[in-house]
Image 1 (cartoon, rainbow, N blue to C red):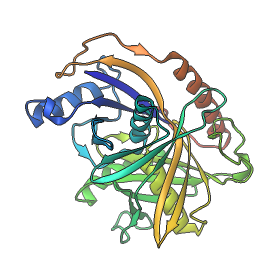
Image 2: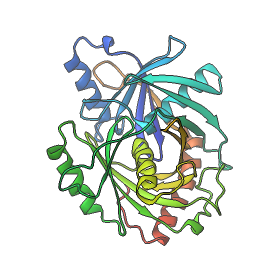
Image 3: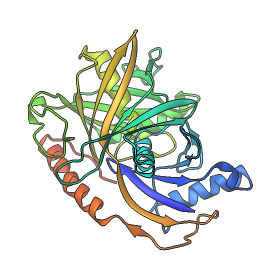
Image 4: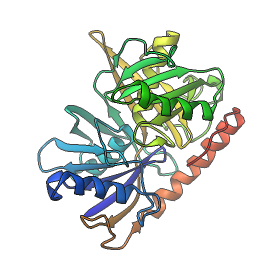
Length: 320
């Protein structure tokens, strides 16, 4: 089967045109997911996989974490999957159904370096009651994955990792944990910002997420959206204002449309193809790996600029 590795802000997610019925049992499917997502495997691993069926007008998709567990949604994965469907159908907008919800993905202008961009429209976010200790001061929000977000004055990666591990103990279904660090709004000058930005006007933040079932990742699309909503909830920033969100793996932007009291987020950022390959149902290699050299080179330029930008802002983070 055709296995495509994509990434959004270096959050690598596989996409495969298949449904769970291709495997004889759920256990076989989970083992397949674990094998292809293993960082020591021939695939180089990933942070999860989307299975999808594009035979209907609205593509149906199912997301799995690298440990084989199912999840409602993956924002960065949806960016990559949506881009594949757009290219396959030659359209400018597509609807993808995942986890009982519909997501609209649209083409966006590429960067001058040739990095492909998409706009992802998500269902309304929902705020939950303040979470229990030790997550007092965090904002709980679902997008639809459960998240808890803390706006911090200083970023500490060890503290984020510790909080992420504690989340499995505190929340029955687990939760993604994000730290949000406000940055100087006047420093958004790098070409790594999406090309539609108004660099001098858009405020910016740094966000890092410890994802349930995956751990610390270069970026988390739903974490970007959850953090955007939490930031307005905590600070009073106009939800409709475009916010540049930098991650360890890249830079995206998010805004929120308010309709009839509902907060409807829009995520914009890259949707890059890393390679295409063939895999068997057992997760083993079944054909050559064909890298998208041009796309990877273009993104490497933007990644280097973003890393330099964060360093200049005093943000220290591991880069998986």
